[in-house]
Length: 308
Length: 116
Image (cartoon, rainbow over all chains, first blue to last red; front, top):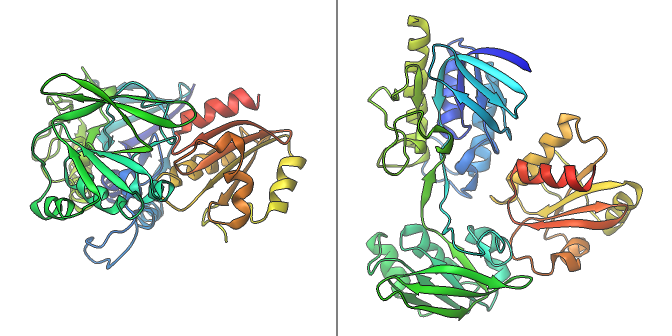
């Protein structure tokens, strides 16, 4: 097995991880960033960013490209699309193996693995992904010209995307598990004022059916337990995010939502392991707050390394 | 009309016919510069640069290019309702097609199975 040593390993190349990479590398700390997917993380999913201070308008893709370039310019190494097959940070030397073939050792680790869109985990969901089930209205909305669709969820994303999808669809039905919405008032008002949107409350989808593409869903009323079929062309799912912490279960302190618990220095329950960004317990999840987390975690990780 | 990626692009129907007829193994990702497509281009670039898949031709094609009908209208893509459409060709024939975002692991599995 190939072996490499670094001062600091950052897991996750979203805004938190890339910022930590920029700060740590600039402080002459040998730093490696690993990511299971594309550099940029969830930031790449954002078409337009208009509230990043100092940048009037950009896309998530462009911002992540710039952050990556900055990190590399300071000497940070980045490996994307790798699979973490072993994670042991309980000892002084932290050991991470990727793709069962390369071992990386470090004095400190920052976990910045972010989150991913939550799935319903309903029967057939995986089969019809891209064949009637979508998680991106901007990407796939135009496939549903004059078709009937469902939007699942009751937060800001769900209601805003439901309104946006009425540009294409003939009818949008919002299916939501509660009898109230968690979205801001303005989003609720805008959705309620749209004549193309109908609502099925206190319900969820428990099954997806079809042949080559999605044709029906099974909707369960969570109050009565009754299920009914609904013929539908497409379903867009916006039910929030879940943290990417599966590989940490039993190894680090997580809360009931599987978010990493940290102190003010963003240190975790494991000595020499820090957490930054959407993966940790926090209230506000924005690119700017992730960038702030990355800064704090990197400075504290570098101090930790220098004091050891 | 080309995508802004580091992959080699297919711009015309002629390009498409040439690449699938002159190469045994070809992976074509047909999409836009959107959030579901970018990760797939990234995975392709990664595999192309790794040197492990020199026997595969990696190409992209803009979904809105009129000549992209060669991908959009494939029978294997008839039920697809999500970008990108990713199609794998062996000796000019479709051996696999996927719709929407795919992870590196999912792409690797297809490459290793179909293009052994």
